[in-house]
Image 1 (cartoon, helix red, strand yellow):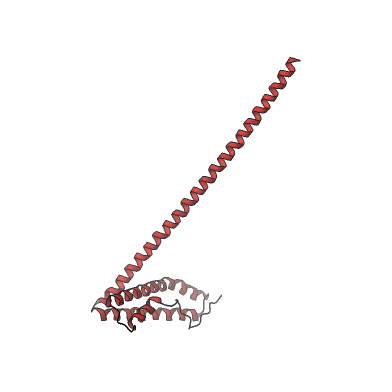
Image 2 (tube, helix red, strand yellow):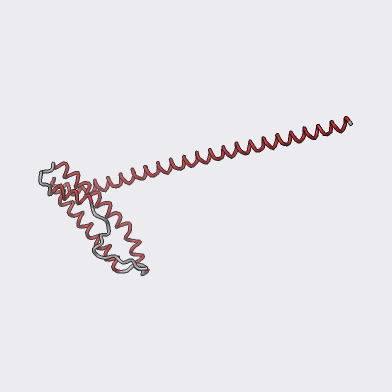
Length: 180
């Protein structure tokens, strides 16, 4: 199978963090520098996240290319996305250096740390949800087993009562036959 992708389709969706930063820069009313720096850091986080995703996808895509499972157009599309992200990272570093000389070298480091922190936080949250789901499932199973046990106990009690009744009837029959 071949995957066809037009060059106009972005590899990623719209980069909201980039758009927000540009909107703040071009706002009519001056935006406090702190807000601009925070927006630039969010933009850097998104760029780092995207670049990490590209790096993770690249080996698999190269393998698919070698096997002929995907066409050259997809590979070219991937390379364009990679170049765009590299350019965005360079632009972020340059922008950061306009706020404070040398900040450019730290902004990507900070962004990468924040992305990793967010991944860990998301993973913890996911693990918490899985644990809660498993606990609910275990509780549901336990309740179901308890109900089944109660049903079994009631069934056995009925059987016992029925057997006792039959014994009493037999005993009555024996007494009646002895009296005769």
